[in-house]
Length: 261
Image (cartoon, rainbow, N blue to C red; front, side):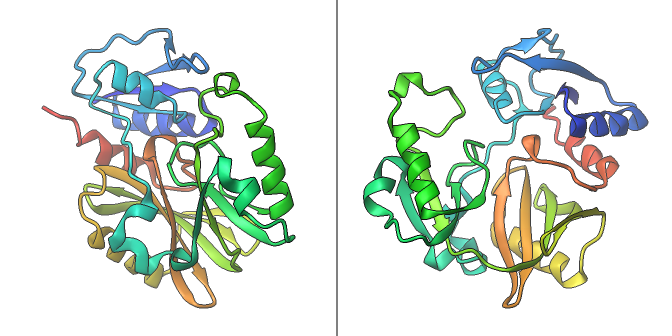
């Protein structure tokens, strides 16, 4: 597999793992909004290339027909088999950004919001209704042609859920429907990166993967522990998700085996 990396702190950690495994890789910058790479990579086999860095790399992979390239995923909230496990999944509110000022009551309530698509337009976070409406109005004040690629747009679909007190949060990496590594990344309000997971949380994540086989060849799944038990938070594109304290040797080895012969 040929590895193409955008220069980030996380991808430098990945490069260390690639060096230890003796796998080839190259460094590139991404031209904002266009998706071209500097320098342009020399592709040996377009069916054995994987890219890690910012989410916009998917455009380059698509335009150059690189496989596997970037592992795009479907919105996790549309996956019916996962609905019973979602954090507040049954009570989620879905609105297009253009409908927020009219349909989201400005009552001071707080919401956890994130785009339905895994496109990094807005990170998942908690905001008051007033702040959410202000954000929507700022975007709606712009003409569509004025909005940069990768930013919130008039037709961006947003998911709103009730904020929940979360005790622990983990990220797990699934390749070929198998959990290959994991990392704790939050305890209560503290950011804590450790390569560890509670045994029942690992079993829960395995059940999630088994419940939706073939979701993607490789992806990231975030889970959490609440006072009501273990819940699924979301999925993320594996090519653009932070590694925290994952076992990168295990992750890189698993992905490298996905090369299409």
